[in-house]
Image 1 (cartoon, rainbow, N blue to C red):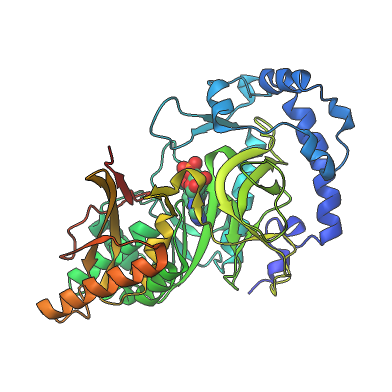
Image 2 (image 1 turned 120 degrees about the horizontal axis):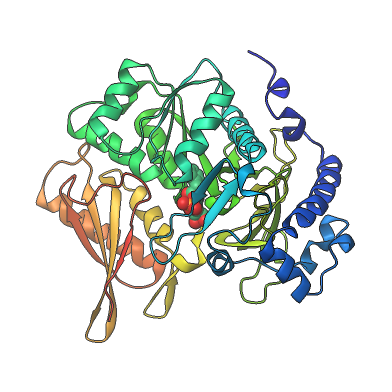
Length: 435
Ligand code: DLL
């Protein structure tokens, strides 16, 4: 096998800390100068009285204004564009379901850099040109399709652009073309495994060795369950359309947090209330600045995603900072009877149960003016003896464990396998029907 230090983007991947910092400072200067060419940032910088030439090093970033999702909407369709329209080769939009989308533009250099970041990520997880790669993600405006596709091709893998859904065909393609690496959302990977189990097939028989799983929050417990079902190694993959899409952060073989590619993204973690940086290692909102994007640099983007920096050096030797698994988004936090609950806290408890499947839905209602939470889960096909007694015990156990985790009693509905709606992309875990 070739030396990993020789591969695509290696010059960035293996930069030392001082080298990275120096590179970031120079790239930040360039990025801010480039941003100022757009009508949007030119106005914002003037309003905030920012002299672009005074931005010298990464420590100056805090003098720049934040950019929010609303700013992107406000700049729709293209006031953040910094180049002539004929230099644009591609656009994507964010996956928001309400209101105007936010559009992101790329030059040829931008899509090339993105593909390099994605290739670098997949290779870090162990993918090689000898692998056959199936992309089980939606194509189109969603970045999980073309983002992974170009990265996998850039790495030199044989790519199957299967797209989302059509589970029977996904399984057929994996078998017939000896797929060794897949990309999917964790919820869809779970759905495929459960479908196979229901049909008496073993997901391990597919012989997949690696999975890139992301685009939605998931717990370590869900990763372990998937690894156990398929026998593959699953790597957490993080990104967002505003920062290209996938390829922002990915796990190394130690699977102990996601390395953010700091040659391309400047990382800050802030307290969302005070907007000040949190202490290293504390949970806060991730703020990212693009460092190598031409068509549409974005300065200090408030992602709303909650995570913390892992400060210890990674045994893999890469110096790119690691982020811990995402807790969720600040806007995903549920306030139930005054208690703050993240869906991931509920998932953690469910995934620890071997008799339960990997799908679940949290429904919130109001009963006699009080918030009511119902957690619907499915019995796993394997391992369950079918008795009412076991079912009742399981329900009581789950209710007790959830109460320990979140502090109040939830209703539990244990359903037959396959009863809950299956996800093909990002799973909808919460239905809020409260008054
Ligand atoms: O989901 C890009 C992507 C595609 C990432 C494929 C990974 C794989 P958006 O549709 O703009 O882009 O959604 C971005 O999804 O702000 C997070 O809230 C969430 N998200 C993405 N990856 C993860 C992850 C793509 N690994 C939003 N863990 C982000 C937790 C994630 N949340």
